[in-house]
Length: 297
Image 1 (cartoon, rainbow, N blue to C red):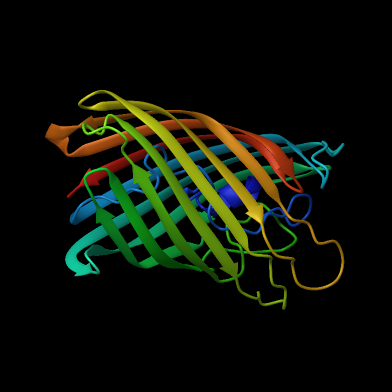
Image 2: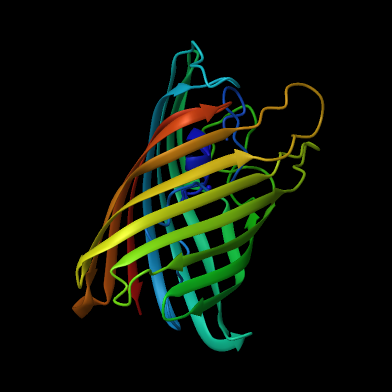
């Protein structure tokens, strides 16, 4: 994927842009995948071909909430920038009528973190995501896709330094979602994308709780090359962390506007979105700005 360091571990990636893309000291969110990075048509994969997608995500927050959603009285500030490169190959091969694809997400993350008198900043490679396979279907009024991915702990990790770009453990990620076009001209779109992360044990023997992320988008084409809409996401830790002690279940919502523009002569698609978070529990609550560029090769 998230929280300050989730976004810093995406990408945001993450991610999203991981992504989007952990705050072990004050607000430890365990997901790799950051919500809200895919946009209006989050669940729609492109037709067969080679693509290069560039996620640029900024996350900033100055508050962290407790389990009741109340602000924790602590001096807290985080700013993270994540840039993730994602080559995508949608093949002509088909399974059950759907096109088979694969992609890799490689994030680079800068994080400036401050909490309770502690402050530091870092830049480095985050955890890499390998998605093999994806399967996508396209009909007259719908797109549908499923996928499996694995997050590898390639980023530098230190449990006592939350600004580090890595998470320190492997994760499996299952994906399923669809986009519905209620009109024949596909001027309107409604998209829902679900991702479920199953986290593995880290080198210290600690296993984070699993994470569900749901993204949605409602879009309207205002001309042949531009679309406006609203995006949102919901992220929830669904199982307990291993071991004794407190067992937080991080939760957060986000919502905001998006504009998407296509430049046909360059085979380029650009989208920009903003999301304001609310309803956070056991995690930070902030803002995300994401700019995504997709180039057909």
